[in-house]
View 1: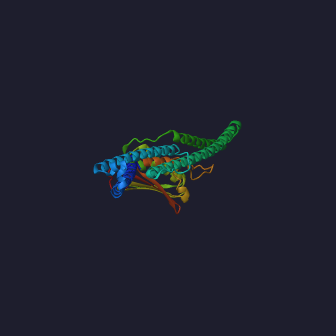
View 2: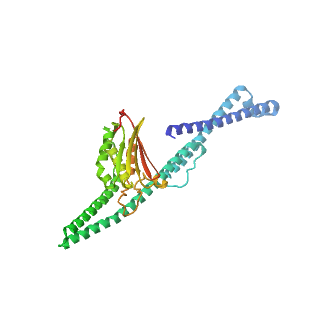
View 3: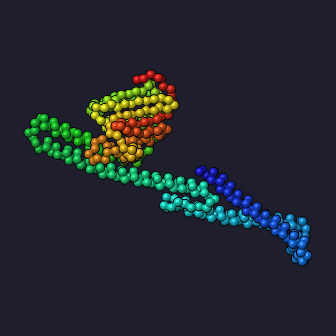
Length: 368
C-alpha cells in the first residue's frame, strides 16, 4: 500500500471515530437537556436552584449551554485523538526501527491495520532477501573451496611433467609430445579455473547496464552456432536452427549474445554424445526462443534453483562441465532487464530453456 492510500485510510478511520464520539456526546447533551427541562417543569424546588433555573429557564440559555458543552466536547475529543495519534506514531516508530532485527510480527492498533500489513510485507521481503543472500554467499564460499581444490591437480601435473621434460634428456619424440600435450591441457584447465575465480569476483562488483541497438537475431544465432562447431564436433553433437529468415530485435547485442552463448554452451556440456541440439524461434506478439538438448533429466528441486547465483548442477570437484554457477543467473538478469522471461523444463531425458523477449519490429515469414 502506498503512502497516499495509507494517509487516506488513516484519515478516514480517525474522522469516523471523531464523528461517532461527537455524535455520542451530542446525544448525551440532548438527553441531559431533556432531563433538566423535565425536572425543572415537574419539580417546583428545582426552580430555586440557580444553575438549573439559568439552564432551563429560557430557550436561549438552553441552546447556549448545549452548544458550549458540545464545543467543549469536541475540543476534548480532539485532544484525546491528538494524544492517540502521537501514541500511534511512537508505536510505529518503534516498529519501523525494529524492522529486520525482530523475528516477531509488528503489532499496531486496529486503526493502523493497513500500515501493519504493509510493514509485515516489507519485513517478510527483507527476511527472504537476507536468506537468499546468505544462501548465495554459502554457495559462493563452497564453490571457492571446490575451485581451490581443483587448482592443485593441474598445478601438480604441470610441475611434474615439466620436471620430467627438464630432467629426462633422452625422451623419445612421441613421449615428449605426449608430455607437452598433457602440460598444455592442464594449463588450459588452470586458465579456466582462474577465469572462474575472476567471474565470481566481478559478479558482486559490477552492475549490468544495457546499450540498445537494432540487430538481426537470426544472423546472430547462425553466427553463434557456426562458432560452436568445433565444440559440437568434439562431443559428436549437431545443432539445428528453426527460425524465421530475419528477426530484427531492439536489444543490447553483446548481452543477448552472452545469454545465447551460455545456453548453447550448457546444452553442449550436458548433452549425451551423438545427440542433436535444437534452437527454435516463434514470432507472435513476442519472440519465443527454445534451446532443447538431450541429456540427463534434471530433478524438479534442482530446476527450481537452476537460476540461483553460484548454483551448479554438478558440484563434483573433478567436473569439467560445472562453471562458476553464475552463467544462468546472469542470463536471467539480462533477459529480465530486456523485459523478458526465461524458464527451464526437463523430462524424459530432455532439457528445454524457453526465452520470451518483447517483439518490436516485423519479421518476414520465411525460414532459414
